[in-house]
Length: 170
Length: 72
Image (cartoon, rainbow over all chains, first blue to last red):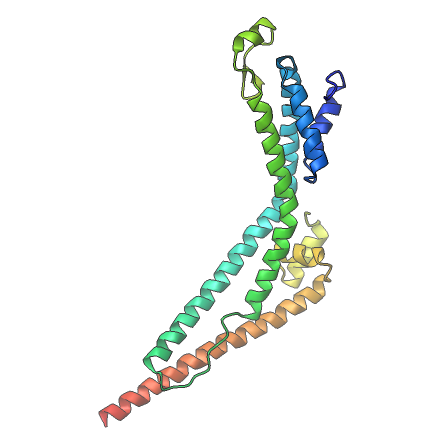
């Protein structure tokens, strides 16, 4: 079990340690931290970790933004190119159907530019993926911590901790 | 990865979008080389367009001829 007497930053670091790369070891460390924090008495500590995780989430969002935008732009450019190709091909085949006797050669259904756009999209997606995983993990961890909120506000009141709503003191 | 002001300026000068500049840098292709490659591809794309247009003209011409023959 994780030692809850350790400084908060240690626990927060432990919680965040799973956000870089998903590995069984880190996932296990995260699970153990969560187990340790399921004690009601640990809820204020969990809240502080949530606050740190939320700050980490904001930082991760800023980190992820350029590549996420690049993915969107690459997708839009590829979609536009493919739409243009489809339109041209549709016109070509309509003509060909009307004049089957004419042997005009079929233009390729892929342009060099569409191939390059696919490559660009692949690179952008590859680059964005770790950032998106990180965002997802932090979000999951925040959700997991919120889920630990004690159902009974009485317990918190008795402990003099007040009522918490979505991780923040009301 | 965010482009620096210098990289952003270079991208603009080379006619690359920010996304293309990021891809070039990430795949370790010198931006100048990537811009040249982009120009080549654009030329090939134009050639593809010309080919489609030529096919359309070919069909239009054939249709006109066919109509002409039918009138005669």
